[in-house]
Image (cartoon, rainbow, N blue to C red; front, top):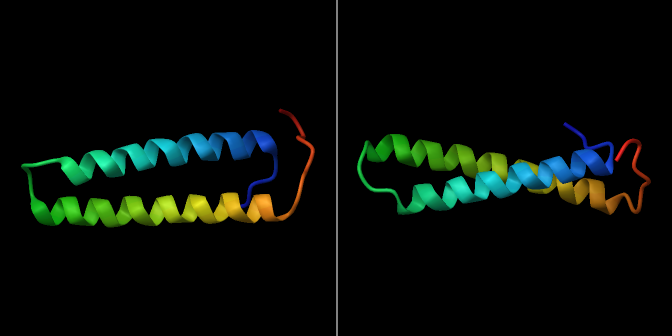
Length: 69
């Protein structure tokens, strides 16, 4: 995945916000299978880090004009 436009950047930031909220909620969740919760947390963290990297790569390329904002 490689962000190509400001519109994609905006959508990715929104996805990141939602994943971070879910990660936070899972940290405070009780009940259910502890192992499953830990695996879910790892998966969420991996996705969060991936989106942060994509955002950083896009921003490091400098200012770009939106193709279709």
